[in-house]
Structure formats: C-alpha cells, structure tokens
Image 1: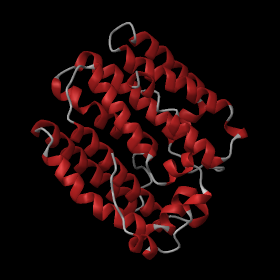
Image 2: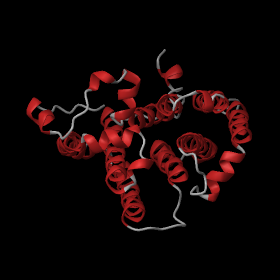
Image 3: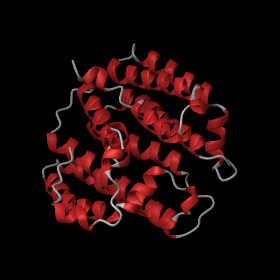
Length: 282
C-alpha cells in the first residue's frame, strides 16, 4: 500500500517531468516502480495465509513500501551512475523525474517508520538484519567496481525469497518452507534472467550464473513447474500452484521474447509473478 500525497508545487519542481498520459497503466505500474512491491505483497500475503499465520495489515504495507523505496533508489542510482546508452525506459524515467521520486521517498520514510513500530519484535529484528545486508550489497555494487560480485539477478531472488518467507521461518515451518523458498527464489531469479537477456544484445558482461540460466532457461522453468505440481500434494497447494503457474507463463514469454519490444516484455515478465491473485481473490 503506497499512499504518498505530493502537492502540485512538488510535481512542478521535478526536472523534466515526463507527461504520464503518454504511458499506459501497465507501463506506469512498471515505471513508477510499483511492480516489485505488488509482487512482494501478493506472495507475502499468500505465504502467510497458506501457513495460517495472522499478519497485520501494517506488515504487508511496510514490506510493500520498503520494497518500493529500495527499487526507486536502485533505479535512480543506476540512472545517475550508469552509461546512458545502456539505460532502459525505467532508468530514463527515474533520472528525468528524480525530484519527484526524492520527494515521494521523503514523504514515505516516516510512514514506513510508523509501520515498522507496529510490527512484532522478532519479525522487525529479522527485517532490520535483512536491511543491513541490503545496505552492504547496495554499497558494494554502486560505489566500486567489483567484477565478481553476486549478480543482481541472483541477489533479487535471494532477497525476495527471504523477505516473503520470513514470517514462516520465524514461526518454524521449516519442512514445507525450505522447498517453497527455494522454488520462489528460482522463479524470481529466472524472471530477472529473462529480462536481462531481452534487454542486452551483448552477453559478455553477464555473470556466469546468468549465462548458465540463459542456456538452460526452458529446462529450469520446466523443473520449477514439476516441483510446483509435486509440492501441491505435500501441502500448501496455493503457494505451490502459484510457482507452477508463474513458471508456465515465463516459459511462454521465453518462447516469444524476440517478438516483443523491451518495455512490454519487462511488464509481462513482472506480471507473470502476479499468479497469487488467482488464489487471493476468491
């Protein structure tokens, strides 16, 4: 849940603010960095419901808002520090509207702090530790060249899985949660790999793990479909089925990637992770 009110004066002060009416709603969902928090909130909610854990609305809202701020910060840093010719539309959008996003983040920060005060102590402490790890990773990739760093494609999978399944790990649901955490991490990792492959013509700069995933994408996605279907019979069918459905959609996107422009492909790849809606909206 992102409720940030920005005055017209704040909007006007943004340098080179791009007219929003030129973009479709799905494009705005992506360009305003609302895709990642939506995905995180849906899987977080479904995981808790499947494990019969009661979470406060503030828990979901704080996760969504924290993910949004992280993605905005990452895209702004990429726009500021990266090579202009390597940027995608999201980087140009965040770079052109940096004052707007900075103002929104300033408004969102106290809201996030208030939401965190309503979180139970074990979960709060776990997320604070995860936040410290994220801060170290951001410092590493944005302040110094590090050729052998953990690739962002894999890091996103690990971080998303840790954030989504943190309540279940704290509650001790290890037997089922291990397999589902690994499968969800794989879905997020391959999602980023699909996007990386579509957005880059030269693959020489890819990490070895990213190149491995690109060579074996259909096989890895098929394995996730099989794992998801298999886990449906072991409990928590909704989570397992969501993994399988997302993998199936991503297989279709992989087959049609050359026929789609970069921005629509990115939006479709992120939308492939919205499968929890099938089980949450009933």
